[in-house]
Amino acid sequence: MTLLALVRHGQTDWNAERRIQGRTDIPLNDTGRAQALLAAEALREGGWARVTSSTLQRASETARIIADALGLQAPTTYAGLVERDYGVGEGTLVSDFHERYGTGVVPGGESTDELAERALRALGAVVEHAPGEPTVVVAHGGVIRVLLGLATDGALPRPGERIDNASVTLFRLTADGLVLESASLVAPEAGA
Image (cartoon, rainbow, N blue to C red; front, side, top):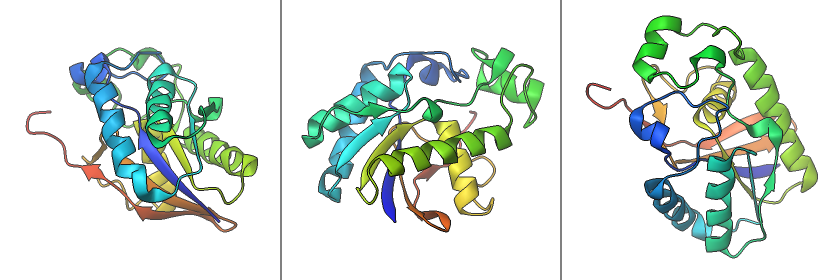
């Protein structure tokens, strides 16, 4: 059984503009770097042994900031933790994306089932590398969203809830699967 703190990367300019990023490799902005430090502070007393992340720069920089703040070794990266592939929808405004594609698969994109399988496999690889070591995993909103769904049999996140930048969601990965310990979910902003 391994405790995992899944942290969504800090803010990027595309997050601020409410654009779909997916696998587009957008860097953190200054707000995102400050959020990463706040996430590190929230994790400070957790007894974390290591930090890992997605290979995308917004996640890997967030992970480096957290590891430095916690006095841990440089993070390792896992390609399986990258954000969902949104195909032709990447770069579009969130409102336009939902209007065009709803909850369906986007042309050239990855399905929810494909994402769930990949994300769970990646968490397994993270744990296999250091079984039992409490680990901070910096990933993406879509990845954390689908893992929440797996751990709660679809009860979370509820419609309209989102995973905020630099939020921390605690899971335990056991032999029986993924167990949710706690989640930070945010209701949509008015007019968003």
